[in-house]
Image 1 (cartoon, rainbow, N blue to C red):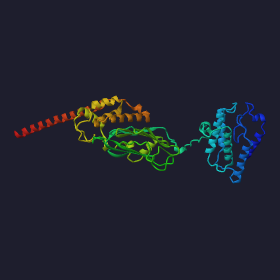
Image 2 (tube, one colour):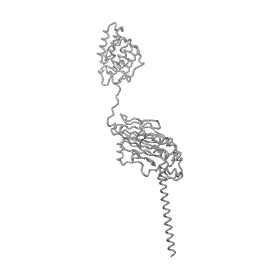
Image 3 (cartoon, helix red, strand yellow):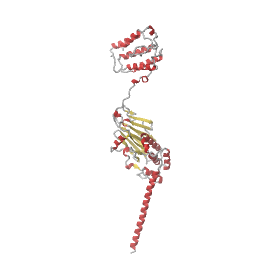
Length: 473
């Protein structure tokens, strides 16, 4: 740089008087400032010999004090490249006379870039460029504070490139998915599209495989000791090289749906392979596990939570090979399943009848809401099939219309995460088939009992005839 500066001094001293007075042709090209080209723009005043002697003396002194000639970490030349790109974008080279404001903006940008460059302690080029730009600003009466052009808007080649995601952090399997959901009091749709209503009070695992564990805790519905709903949900993403070797935990519990993982982060890993998205603060969050193409959706509605997950079929089938209890894979244990279809039918035909423990819980004499009213609410909410049944069930069991919103949200999630499910839906909005089934079963039972009574009377009549015959002998 010292030699370049000296050559620049000689070049300028050799300029003709006409050029010094600014009479250079308007078509003359400005090659830029700094080491890339040492031709001055025609509007800039000629630097005095004294100025160049000061610059050269500074270089000599720095060299005498033992400064090294450069540092591998100092990339000050990029400032010149950025400056030249800015100059060409602003089309300064073809203007005559040059706009002093544009010149000062360019010089301030150059100076700002040099000052931000790190690792240049003792680099001769760095100090030379810095002194040179400072003198040019003084000559052109440029203030230190003023407009600049940020490198991000004029120099794309120097923007950091995003990390390329390695193959093992991208899901390579088939893009065929399964869905599981849990909502309401509580109702379960398994990965294999089985529909169940369960008691499952307490803590239960929904998913548990080598990548992910999801556990829910179901407690008695507030103000109702018979119904249960999800009051706590825990998602654990197991350690791996794509995110973190430590487990990442997310916990939601009554009146708390955090917008971060437990450690305060929303993204984990250099490739954002694990990300928590707060879709609707306090109501709806999504956890995206990109290296297994899995999405977990958690919503809070009222005091309780709904859960949905979309996972590749290959991973679901691998989970099926495990003997671990997973409600999403194997469904609820038989002892925990409620016959909700029979419950709904009995409630129409005998609304004041006691409920069998095998269907719900004993001790409840009347529903919290009439079935006909519950049906109307759920029909008006555009719920169909299992989601319609669940809505009616929950309203009759609790009277809490938040459970209608819970069924609606779960239906929206399944249509979003598992669109093919829509093709299997019948769009049913009534309970007629359950009523007919119940009536048929009751009719068959009555016919059987009626025949049993007739046989019993005949048997008694025969016995009576035998007794009379015996006594008359």
